[in-house]
Image (cartoon, rainbow over all chains, first blue to last red):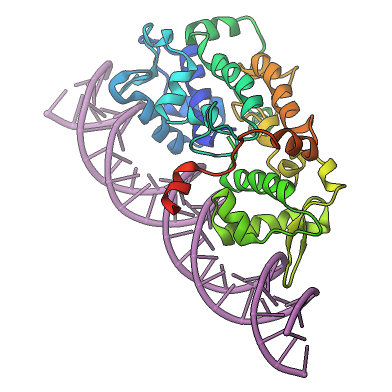
Length: 152
Length: 152
DNA sequence: AATAATATAGATATATTTGTCCTTGATATA
DNA sequence: TATATCAAGGACAAATATATCTATATTATT
């Protein structure tokens, strides 16, 4: 559904939000290992998400790394999609028509219009803080188990 | 959501099913113009869908072209996704984890599992015949109006 | 049999995505 | 102030997706 860039970004943001804080920043090495993504490529993606410190914050130097401010944790994962210009994956016509709408519908429009809001809702109705909180007492994962096994 | 290849394929199959028959085959020129897609590229994609005449049938030579047999019209659009190996767009983990499952869920799993079956259903609960029939008396489109305007 | 119209197939070109590497800049700490 | 540790940024490389072009095979019609 999403590009690899976006998949990495979503996983990274959740990981950073869960384990990072201004007092405990997370290095790109740790992030890439945790979410099983190519390090340098992930670094590039995170750069887009740190622009203007809207979502992710970063600090260089020793004990530097990435974290989310408490304010940033009020954002939703939809913010990630927007910053990467990938929200169109959800919002655009499934048949790729540029002007698909209620008055000029594609053959799938009447059906997809019932699903689209659910996808939007899925990424926008919970703050990152809530999402991470939900995860605290579950066995949820962000890593490919198959990769973990290789590393062991 | 889908690749351009898949978007073109879905639009093409619907168009061919609506206007084509063994007695009235549709040329690639007409298809590409109707669905607003690059001709040669679309031809390549249709080749994949004509393998073994599973979905689209084709005949070379004068008055040749593409059509769907009555049997093929019993298929669903899910068949297009399968033939192009794009059903994973719907079925795979939204965060890109290879082993995301009920027992090893990603943070979005519990939410996406409610939507995934609806997406599958959307592409598999109606035959292409039914879909085309639904379209007969509606103002549904398969073309980018903006492109139409350019051509006029 | 010749011709024209069609899809098929292969080669190539272009654009985009994904990925790596190396240098630079920033900063905490010794 | 020197050094080590971190992200930022730029250049490049590889893989994949998208697109075009040309030649070939098939077939209906003349």
